[in-house]
Image (cartoon, rainbow, N blue to C red; front, side):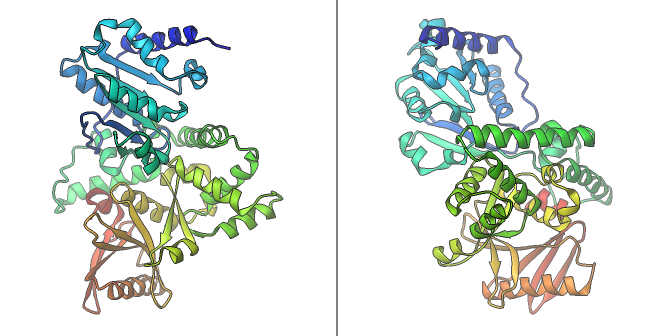
Length: 443
């Protein structure tokens, strides 16, 4: 067993190693976080979405403002050298740092950056103690949505603010590709529209994970699949000590192949049983919760005034990135319209927390109803093309108009792959918007 003193030396080595390397800060993200005195800044999101890079951006800003690198305490808990920390009290971290720099204790601000801290047992009281007892700023990343929970806030005694980090948005993708297209106005020149369409075609193929953007298709698919395997085995099977890994894996693949589709716990349980798995609704429910918790999949409920009815009705499932769905799934089995719907969901989810699907009194479905921070309602239908058939066009418009009337709204949106028009129907307005434009301006 590794001793306390051995762990102390390993952490000191980690701290000093970080001070020897130059920090790559990547491109500016759209997220604008702000540190508040005596509160930890927590950044959460799926693996490889850019959380560590965002920390490096904060570190570089501190260095440019004159902070000494010796005042930076950075640890990445995915580092295998820190594995034994799980068996030793976290206070060894501060013991290691102040054994290197005893003169800084209580005299200089120490900037603590803890990457993927959810691996560390009882990290919440440790982080809270650092803020309470040391002259410090604390920045944390993690791959668990539970870090947004009230329980974490309670354990941290209100000493935290949490932000979500997603893979690149279309705007961030343009910045990454150094495409200097003026998008501060919705009135775009014909040239800029052509450039944006071309850029969106590339973004549609690659998705938003930073590491895969410039890779060839075969390498991109391979990297996406490795991400998926890491999430399955590291974030799910190992973290939750799952004794039935094959059941979880089959469930995850089924959900990926049925993205933007309705599901129920009963239907998922029956499907797994049909494959020969001896499982229960409770187990399936737990698996689904854990898959969502690591920011890989998201569930959308039916919009209903009754929370009970909303929970009892079928739900829809979406993935963190539309392109990774293509890389993991058998493409012929994934509906391209569902991929577009998935893309619009993630575009919305970057900005809004409350997203539902809507069912009219005549049982017609609208893909999304968004509740804004100001409690305003936005109705959004997603359709790859309104021009494929009159039946498709009538179905999408009729459902949306019914919902607009029922909710006493004036406007609704239909997002398509590349069509644009304004439709007047029953004294209501429907704005048809191409996906690239919706992603750019997020109406």
